[in-house]
Length: 86
Image 1 (cartoon, rainbow, N blue to C red):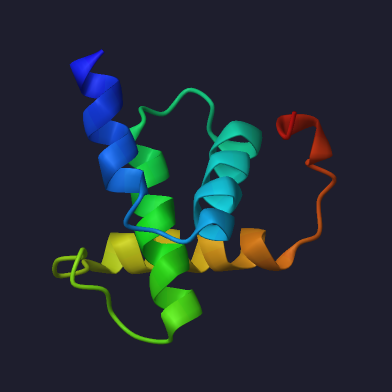
Image 2: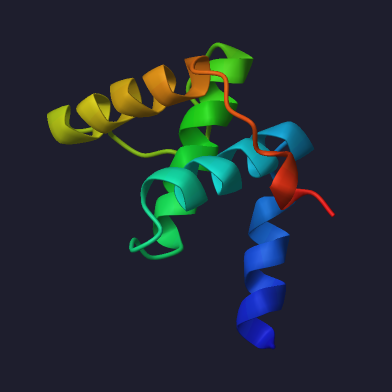
């Protein structure tokens, strides 16, 4: 239960639409990846939304930039994800 509280506290640093978008992206593209993948998506989406680097992010390598480009392309593609919302 402590892990869940820690994760939820981290997620509260982000806008609701960013968290929902990151969860939807993770579920639709990379279900086999660990939960840290969702954190990365949230950081990247929040940065893009804010138009600047977040204090939550560290230096970005070339491979991370490529992943962000993929995430940006994914975010730009419309999807029917209403099934995730109860």
